[in-house]
Amino acid sequence: MSSREVKRIVILTGAGISAESGIPTFRDKGGIWERYRLEEVATPEAFRKNPDLVHEFYNLRQRELLKVFPNAAHHALAELERKYPGGMLIVTQNVDDLHERAGSKNVIHMHGELLKVRCEKCGHIFRTEGEIFTSTVCPACNQKGGLRPHIVWFGEIPFHLEEIYRVLEICDLFVAIGTSGTVYPAAGFVEIARQAGAWCVELNLKPSAVADLFHEQHYGPATRVVPAFVQELLQSQKRKL
Ligand code: NAD
Image (tube, rainbow, N blue to C red):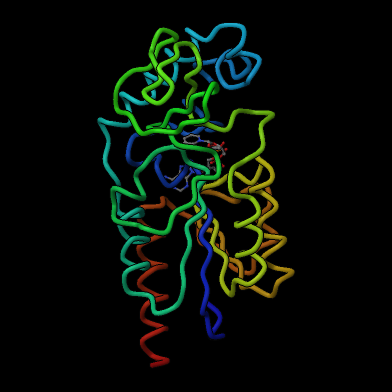
């Protein structure tokens, strides 16, 4: 790690941080897209064509999520947020709630949340751990047929981009964890942070598609490299005090 002073940290997380909790990644062997066809379950067109199948897919993913737990990497980031004297924001591409369950407070879900549902008729967004069907009634407008997963599907614009770009442009340290660097705009965040003068670190099982853009890289499973990196960061901060 560079010895420069770090005040604001932005951490981008991807499917790799949740892999050891038992949530399969998208693109790795055994990943979700080996078992389902993307165009049948994760696009607005798919939902219009076969909403029952799309609800079934997300109800299944939700049930799987409720059986798993945050791992040492999620806990390490929550500890960093608690102990770090500067500002820290997690921007996650993950739709699971494992950062929150580990205790992280400052989390932006740019691709939505598996445990939230949105009504396309009235715009109401609510949290649910129950299954959703085309026949489910919206608790706000009492209409049926408008509920959809609060997930950013392929072809849709990620949430909170304006806020994310604003923090990337003023951050001092940017850390990307467990993300393949193939899904934009998230894959381009390193370039924005780097141009803003941030020190950029990649933590992953193996080099991502954009690995060369980082100043520093650590490879290994997230449950090993993330806690080690967090301890090093907290120690270097202590030494400065
Ligand atoms: P991805 O599947 O494209 O890449 C996963 C990355 O994680 C790879 O770079 C891989 O090397 C790394 N990885 C795998 N196991 C790891 C481990 N144990 N430790 C550290 N790194 C590990 O996933 P992505 O880059 O997040 O792709 C973006 C898309 O995937 C997003 O749209 C996101 O919403 C979605 N996604 C989310 C979840 C979730 O919510 N948990 C799960 C799968 C996919």
